[in-house]
Image 1 (spheres, rainbow, N blue to C red):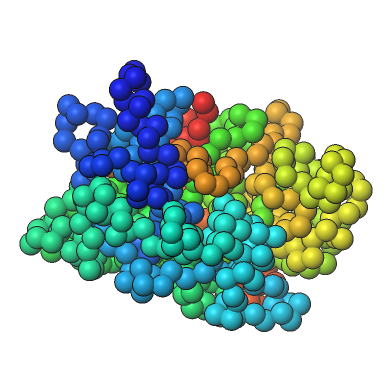
Image 2: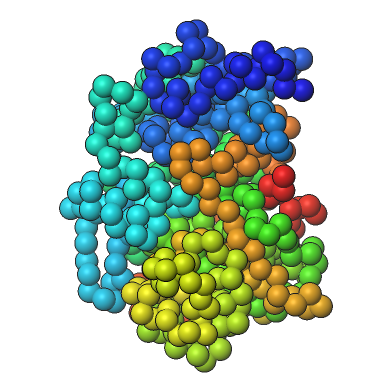
Length: 492
């Protein structure tokens, strides 16, 4: 029950007051809702605690609570320590704009992109850090305000540490030991995103997620005790590293969860693939850049595809298509134009004529997609059981994540994965509730293998791109798991 006293206390902590220290209540500390048991002691490790980052959006949920199921929820989790990369604290890097297709000969190094250019590019395409990245990048176009609330480039870790009483640490082992000699936390939250990290030959950003994980594992092994671990977004740019992460969690017997917020966000409309259904074909529509919004879209699609008859049995082949080859594949039936039209019908952010004069439009039937989308990309996936699914990244035509599948006996099932706007990013509250479940029950609400498979599919698709968009057999992606009986997305 939300009492008047609690309401007054909670509503004082708006997004503005969190960002602007003079507005914070004096002496405000973390107050777990369930006082009948000690709170879970949480170590946070990451690289970008700044306004609009996913680390800020998610970690703040554990500092001041979050809305869930029509109420304000104070989690039974207390942040006790934090490690933020020193170079990120000293100079938070600009969001990386999606790079143009290599096939179109537009090589652009992220190091040469100015803040304004990066924000403009990402705002147009939805890039710069996955779901919600376009909004964050657009916000980053503003210069930091030194006389008011922190700007988008300002690091928040020192201020939050002082205000909420957690330890700001110099390295990851210190964060897990809280400055002492032994493991002193009950859970670890790892969020590594944004920043000018190098890219490999596949155009993947080399985020050090595996390195962070290995440092934590070393502490676990030294102590002879391990705690639940959450890894935001893909496990690694390398499937071998991702597979090792999952295998290590199993070996050391600690629960692990990973992934983005899209699989657990609200769906518009509230619909699902019935468990055990026979999916004949599926199309997902996303926006963003290479190795950014595509992961979010692939994992959202996987959260639907895994519910098919027999559960998940893996992916046998992938192919990356770009440019005119995407449209040719649609004409030849490689992906379904009917399903694309169905998925786009669920969008609240279509571009083209809808933006110009508010006119609704079936872009597929009208044949306008090639004019609107300058660099289309298709991630074609063939599952081991013969089911086909395609992710279409259509920057310029849409700014929503939508999905449609043809299901035997059900017809078309289509929905939108709600991508909430800045600054509140409420879909991270849905993810925070799943993270809290992991930490408090030591049980993952859905299998980490979903993120493992999605991480591998993305890497393999980018390998196909590197090899001239060839179809690649993927026997290494024989990842098998059963989805939860009840889907875990937000419903209220």
